[in-house]
Image (cartoon, rainbow, N blue to C red; front, side):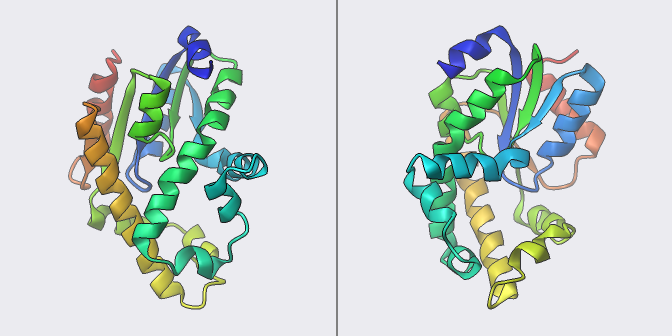
Amino acid sequence: MSAQRLLNKRVLFIGGSPCSGKSTVAERISKEYGACYFKIDDYLDEFVNVAAQKGYPACKNCVTMTPDEIWMREPSIQCKEEFLIYDEISESVFEHLNKVDADFIVTEGAGYTPNVMMKYGRKEYISIVPTPDFQISHYKQREWVSYILKDCSDPQQAFHNWMERDILFAKQVKSECEKNAVPCIVNDGCRSQDEMFGYVKELFDLK
């Protein structure tokens, strides 16, 4: 039902891994083409809480965990849970998109995994994933990282686990994109922002 209602709008979906350049590209599309910009991360806590209240297991588990229970686990377990969470919140994401009062929307977030997008049948969809070095260097520039990990017993190990989780996440996204013939850009930082923007414009056929 959500996907059908979105047929009346043009929605550009940018998925992929965190710290890959998704926001930079989406913000520029919004500015230069007048598209309404919707970022999943701005509503992530709300979407997770809604899913938890509905009894969805991954989200329900997530909202009750301590920082150590979240970040000191094996990265592979964290990565698997991340995909489950994004699947569980997807109905809230698309319900929100349905309510956006705009005919042209650009939206981005790691929650737009290939599996989620195949379920909703969206055509104008790409992913951007970072190389490990690009990812880690950009995470280290984010001031909120230390705040998120401040209550962990070993913030350094927690950060390492976080980075390993997202490296695994990026690999799986890239693999799923290849299986489903979804364009996936690997951002190693060698392209300028203008070059990246130009490449995304071509993929979305923006003139």
